[in-house]
Every structure is written in C-alpha cells, then in structure tokens.
Image (tube, rainbow, N blue to C red; front, side, top):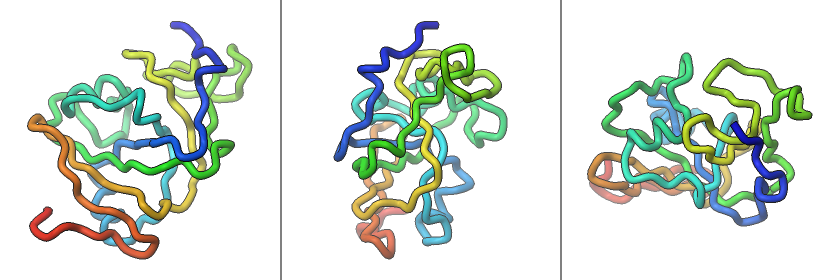
Length: 159
C-alpha cells in the first residue's frame, strides 16, 4: 500500500467534505440531538460514488461497530464546506511518521485500503451552517435536509 503523497493530501478552505453517517445516528442528527461531526471524513472530489455498495467498499465502512454491512441498499452522507483546514488530520501510523493506530481496514497510510481514497480524521466539531444530508440508494442520491445553524430544514415530502 502506498502512503498518500503529502502534497496532495490536503483540505483547503471551502473544500466539500463528506462523511457516511451510521444508520443509528441519522435520526439524532436530523432531530438536533447530535450536533457534531467527528471521525473519518473524505473530500467529496475523491469519494463520490454511484451506489451504496461503492461507498461501503471505497470508504472501508465494514469495520467492527460501523453499523454498515455488505449488501447495504441505502446510506446517508453528511456534506459540508471545510471551515478550518488545520482540523483535518491525516491518520498516519507510527511506521509512517504519525501516531495513529487501528485495526484493519485502517491502513495508516492516509488512504483507504480498497480504493486509496484520501482519508482525514476530524476531532469533534460543530456541524457547520449549510451542511447537507443526502440519501444514497441504488437509484442515485436524494437531498434530505440542510442545516441552518439551528435546525435541519427538510423539503416537504422528504422522509
């Protein structure tokens, strides 16, 4: 596995980011009981896929306790514009000059194991104003809600 080229593994102000939301957390997000983003996140430019299976494989979502399983038919993603680029840490293992450890599929190289998608770790931060949730299914993606800084606004008729 190649270590990510450090020059190409950056997050810049305004860059679109996304995180797959475990099924158990989507309702807490949309009802305002969960107000932070944390954990592994990805640049949208690297991690926009056609269906849930590609997200599952490409983002290594099969780790223990993820809530995602093989053959998933839908998943939710949270997308936002990066506000503080220095908050996005590249998770390098000690062997690669970092201090991150983890069980597979964690690679410690700054990229995912299956498709070499650049990954970043984000300590808990408030959900930014303008963040959006999308439902990804085999039929495509559907806009679910936008965060206005206080509540999630949903179009009429969206589940």
